[in-house]
Length: 232
Image (cartoon, rainbow, N blue to C red; front, top):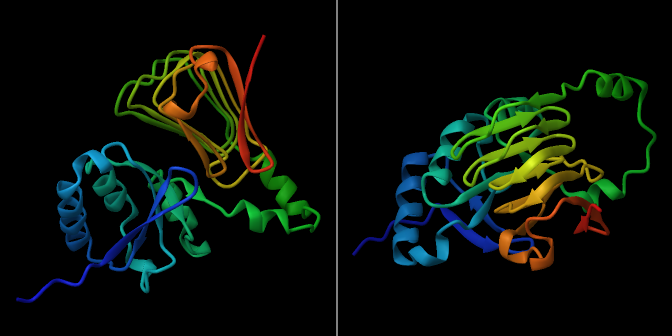
């Protein structure tokens, strides 16, 4: 009996995040095999946070970022973002609203001073203010800071290259510093988030201390660990 070679591999990643190492550009085959794997252990995969690592893919240039994001999201998994995206494809990935995670440990070793043109780029960053609720299934992304004046519902996703401010209950998923800014922070009036992330470091709802749930908090990264601090 012939067996089909598996074209992907799932390994444990940082914290409770799992990483999919993709080995094929055949997304139909990937979707089929992924759904088969999930059907064997459905309770294991439901709402599992996933990062897609492209380092094992030989031909990244032909990847359809939007489709692969949809495959993961419709397979009961939580799509966190992409890892090891080639520089020439960063803009394409961002255009598909796929967060691109960077290796903070590598970034820490870079001691060079910012170039003048990099400083100019910072001034071009687009901040965003949203004065409507973000409902389940919706996604909001800001190239700079993201400010939300209404509630973020369960099943919604908010992402920002910079900080996130929510002047209402925060449910759903909130990812700040999605391009690797470890100085990004998250602020909210009531913390109920399914997932919080800063620069690729994550906590799930069950990892949030009970005495901080529903409270106004500040979330930041310190020594590569997410810290949650109540705002008095």
